[in-house]
Image (cartoon, rainbow, N blue to C red; front, side):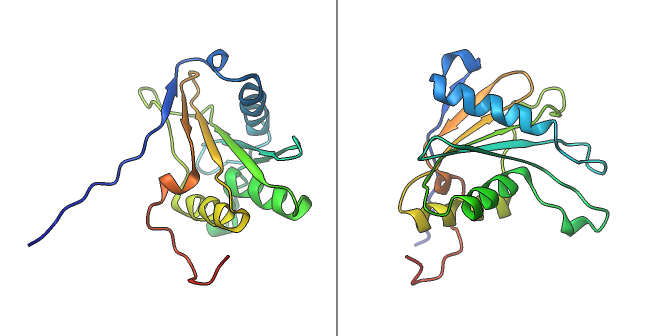
Length: 161
């Protein structure tokens, strides 16, 4: 007998940044600021990201495109890789993501599969969840408790611990 199972995850939805904890407001504001540094001449879709570390440092990143298209990098990975390279002993507590360029009628956007894989692996590496905050251009926010919720079948090496 075939059995179908649905994957579900819970998230919180907010209509204003003012409804969040002060620390989360600051992190999202850092992501908004980071989006101004995006280089997106091809997609015209600017994204800013900000990682909050356990020592309260915020590391920002923005998407960086390139004419050799696969050579660019998403804002999430720019911020995560920079945090890991510059603060290797710190835990990544939260990741805020923002884009000012959503099309009319779109409520929220989501990290790409490659970014989801990177987030998931950092959770495994640090033995701690990374909270994800995603804000759209009209101020709507999703709060997701752990990155692995976004990628239930993440690629893993069996002995990665």
